[in-house]
Image 1 (tube, rainbow over the protein chains, first blue to last red):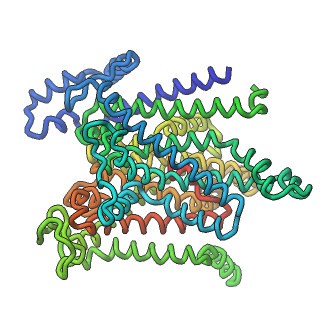
Image 2 (image 1 turned 90 degrees about the vertical axis):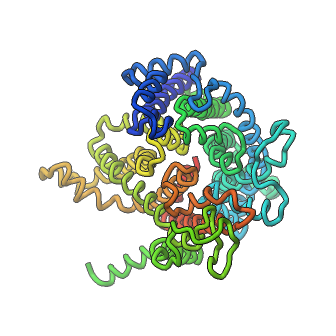
Image 3 (image 1 turned 60 degrees about the vertical axis):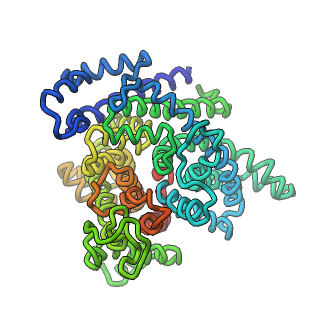
Length: 312
Length: 288
């Protein structure tokens, strides 16, 4: 019942998002036809182009045609290079997935460890150091972090290539191209996870049952591991979901900085070329993934916590 | 109001500057703002004149070397700060000007605006902000004003919701009900009785929001979708000169350093102000 309700909300949201994506790409004043064909294009050329894209029809009709094709899995053809948007996506999605998963695998254990450390040693020097460092790191844009990493690690020390252009053989056979993008994503997302874990742990550490466990003479180490952390880890699902959602936005910038040929870099190139069908397709896909992550996280939390389950 | 209580209020307001971290933040921010707003008058070259050879390393004439066209990097660093700060401030201001009244009205009148606000919030939360900006940039082209409006739109529902909650608390107080009973008009009540109580929430919420606006403006400028090339802009400089990082690293590292100092110092100060008001910086709003 709850799951069905959650799914229905998700579908409704996705429908609203599709209207937003469509409206933002089509309605705003800039005229896509002259932007793509250039200023020298004759009115006749522009008219042909508009008819090709269906831009001469009323907007609700255009939206209806677009969304009914999208629902059938047809995202149209890229204006820039005439390939179907679906094959554009399938050529790049895998690379983005590899990047996002690699970042996730590195950042989760590290940030949970730091978060727990800060939470247990609340208001001590370790906690302050971790908190201040994360407050600073969290305010850095990804492309600035990436610039520093490239300047030091790739240019000054010459340890790694400064860009992640993947030549033949795919990403997995050239794992070195992943190091700097993954590091950038981690440095940006880690402080955020640390702060969430820290507040969960420090809250649990001052809870009554933890005090009780301490007072009854249980060794501190055991109090931390058996009593406090077990409960503090309950919101992990949400932390994981929020991290995944961050990564969806994060890869757009990071892939562009490193010229990594994933979905994010493809999206930015499509935006610059004003390749409307490609932008719409990729944006819808990313928004759908974003919403699905939310739904899955909510459902898992409900399944994990018995109290929420019985109240349904 | 007596002099003593004025002194106390001021002291309380400045209490957040007691931490050494905040003092460093204030000094750094003053430096960055100085470079951004006074720097342009001291630039040795016009930021768009081409005096040197592309990507020459630093020398006595060109302190930070030359960029991808041969422009003077030092002059462009001095001239490139205004855009990101001003457009970030503009987006934040615009968001409050629209979101503020909506929030006050929704909180005071408890109307159907509530439902609309919640739905608007849900839709915007179903979307990474940068994705929204990319979609807008596709429709509007590389147009910084369209993107500033889009950044404001990203903030509006959450501003409205925060101020709505704060207004609901205030609007049941005696003096508000008294004003309503003596027949004051709604807009008068909102302006005279409720708005003066909103500065706390606005100040606590405004700092992180300004940081977010700056991050987003910097991101679109970096992607080449915001301000257009002859303009000197720290974020744009990083992407323009990326190709020459192995030849003249300063052409990218210097503007990157300025952006880093700007966003980190604002965030440190915002965090201190917010925790002085008993709130913590909403990190979720920063990185979503």
